[in-house]
Length: 463
Image (cartoon, rainbow, N blue to C red; front, top):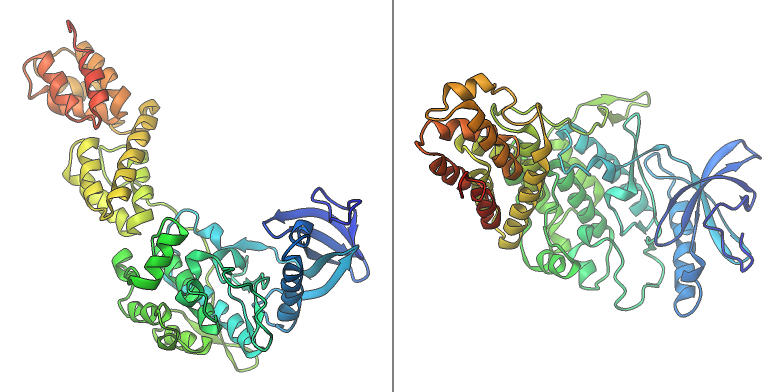
């Protein structure tokens, strides 16, 4: 504890009756500590609030929000909700002691922007919906469902946390006019338009999370809050099965309802959302000891990237192309990159054709810039790069009018701009040209930028 009553952001020895063991995390609202309750031999997570949020105008509202978290979460005792044990204040600084959950935030599984297996995604969402069903029955609306607030334990159990911006339906609205509550990517249309957000806003956010789990992308691709708000309010969301054609088409109807712009057109209860998913028979169920049914959850794992199936190409370059495209096109990018690589013979063609598949011009230019940078990064690759299976003897077999030493020099010059693919290009084009200048000029056509092409052509002997 600091001298002015602020809870230390380094590590106080204790908070209330809890001995502090470590710092678990920091955020805009406060610091979360790992504490130990010696009275009952139990570790707890202790959430504090930054004193700066309490000082000055609006401070009391922040404090009321923090107290409301305890009242809201304290009413929610459910296996899929992080349990709150105690609320306290030390020298004017409030804290919450809650269940210490050892798991991974769902957002960790989404960092690679790859979809989870269908059964896993649905099993996770069903548990989130079970948690919300219980909370809504207690009159509690979370209002900030997002992957960072969903924790997956090692055994597949899901815990929903952070009711810090939850509201009690029966209480007055303490949010100031114009103060937007929630995370924009997961907010329902009514939250953007400053309307009352009820349980259906939670179901909308859950639909966004499900969409993201199944595609690796979000239903709206706005790059900032204002663009995202316009899309959420005015434009249709992306089609689930267009981004991931491997999914059953029946899921489109489920997501259409979950993400409906008008609350009255969405699922009205979490149980309806669960029933729609279970009706598709996407996950196995088994009987529990008490006669009820539970989801059998497979271990949640981040999908492993597939081995490069395109011979003659740099696996790193293709993987980077996939990664960049997935952000705008979703999992279909993987198929698109492979198919295009089988049809073209140079990085320049690959970039051009992949970029043409991106509908947004700014995103298209961004992809092209990032790929040029990636190509520069692969220039240092050696035997593991593209063409590693193409030996010098193979090059000499198709070198036409050129000796092996000359082609090796050309390859070294071209590698600076194209990376390991230079070896394959030199082999292909050398047999079709009759002069060294012609060879350089045809190879230069494969270099994406004019400045790099000019620099490469200056390396022609005698120029």
